[in-house]
Image (tube, rainbow, N blue to C red):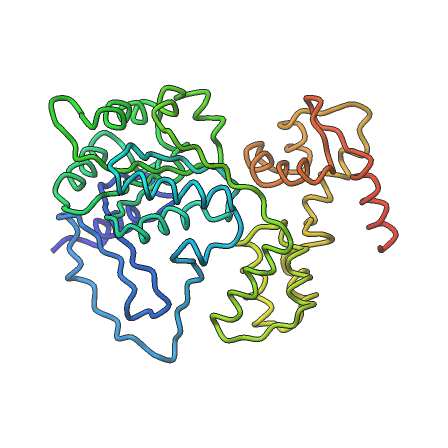
Length: 355
């Protein structure tokens, strides 16, 4: 019998984000609205799930995952969906069809890959970049060769994968070979929120991917459509004014909008929901406002690291979570350091005057 710490180590290996251990894991996910039909299958010989007691499905506990399964259900991103349709046809005609999806967190990168897999009934192998090393890569390629169906090998957060392992993919993607082994042709897909890192560190890898898909920020109307779609699926009627308020206060982010709606369905008080999420105005949080206030007091532009320190953020946290939206909405500008714009100053005046 293995001791508790060894099983704890095994559990930590399966955590998708903060794991420090590496384990070759292939998993396939069948997402449905019915929890009794939902399957996550681990195919790793060293994992013994016999020690886990089965949990009888309790109909009183409803599990629901809001995730489109087909392109017709996927709202917005028309150009991306058109590209996915082209890729589907190329796969059917045995034409090279690798792709990378670049976009903001919560905008449906993983969902698009799962839709692609579902539409063509492919074998989806899904992992994240930080879990890949030479051994795990070989493990996944082995799985591709032994499965009859066409495989989609999807690496999410590929910017977290070490460049030396990314480069191992080059001959596989171009020639479907590694050392002296032939690999069954497959579709490689990856997603990132930091494509600039890949352009800097592994441009040769990106050259071998023919389809580069960039997801755009959603519009308020598209967010409203998503929220109505979600509320209809869970049979909850939500007032149009609530849908409108959420669509204007989620930074036009689908994942964030659904989270706000779920909180509203529990609290039934939209002002309380916004307060709990520290949303002040038009989706901007207390931290966004703090950033603008710091910039408004400066007489000269400031670098990202210095600005992040002033508002008690890590530079990477500031660059990924706050700056893109503030720049896109025109509240700050880069020249190349950061300055507040007239629109940003006007917003601070509105908040100060309670507008």
